[in-house]
Image (cartoon, rainbow, N blue to C red; front, side):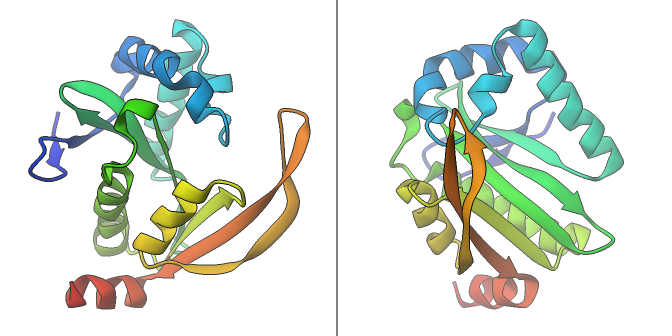
Length: 186
């Protein structure tokens, strides 16, 4: 399996695969309450069978070229991840997302990992538009979208029913020419 360095701190980005279901579940248990504030991932991964099933679904998406999931490891532990929840290569669109357990917050891991997968999507898969949909109350994820050079396109009012409430979702995006220009200027 390959690993991509995320910088001098030893953090790595690696594919998350079904054989890692137990490690994924342990990670989710460590961050369940924190991660679950804004995303449903902890509700979907509750035991070993659901963990394996979740990762298998992404393995199938990867095989069909319709999605990807990667974990972020720091100090040898899985601490978060980034993914393409959807990917439509024919239309050149993808929706990126992320999660992180509390022990890894504030170190720029998600921003660094998202840069890697967006670079790959734009340069290797020909994706033209990468979206980032985020709860309007999730300040840290909105900050990642800004650091990635994304543009806030609008708010989908009360579009996301989650845990008995309807949440506003902000839509951010970056287009391939904008991404390339920003990466070239860096």
